[in-house]
Length: 376
Image (cartoon, rainbow, N blue to C red; front, side, top):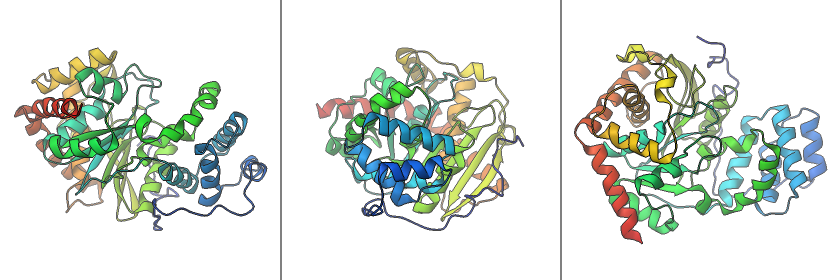
């Protein structure tokens, strides 16, 4: 297994504490920017309260661009911890426009940053999962470093992104899937735009999206291209008591890849187990990553329809594989061993293939577009 993959000795392997994202935490009385920055510059981890204090200041627009940039750079230079990421995510959620979706639901999302410029695999996988009958509440934004983010390709398909939070909830009931546009649900995050743009580097904020879905779905399938951050994200889900699969293709993709093995951090019942998922064990042939390369939003939207209309090949295999791991999460009898993971993902892939081959995935796209347009 590649050295960048998961290890059974990961520090986050067995987090057991849980936290509520709806209860405000009082910041440490002595918290201030000099104190917080000094701790980070000394190489010491912040506790969740201190990290949350900083996030509260940023989300409230009370931090200067220099303070925001200094905090993000110092945090990145030290290396983020599970507790820091949890503190940031929890307070970001506290400033969000939250929604509640009845019954079990799932999000499939990638952090981006793999620079591979692939088609929108997780977005297509989310549609396939929804077509099997699992409610999907997807959280995403426009492209930052790629040619087409989830919001861009959905807009190109005809999905109306301008819905109110109330209507977003109604749409999932009508179509089985809905989209939480980050700009709508996290208005306070606008205060980070200038310092992040001026820094021009990846920071902790690049990894908060999967942790801050305003619906907090029951399950999360998360792709993360950063080998160090992936287990930290898994650790936050474990501390929250939420089931999740966090994965990184061993070729560097923020997807379950079809070119080689994928490192998986499987989160179940507050614990994280590390595995290597092999597509060949699942009956797939390996494909080069270049076969997944996409284009702009219009091009990628065309790929969505082509795959759902029956086109076979690398993109279909990748979509089915990523839908398969998401569906494996929803199995009540899913295990935590590597053999069980392959068994459950293969079962999920079978359901995903049926959703595509029967036309259910294509019908879902049209139903989703219609539901959002009817809202206007």
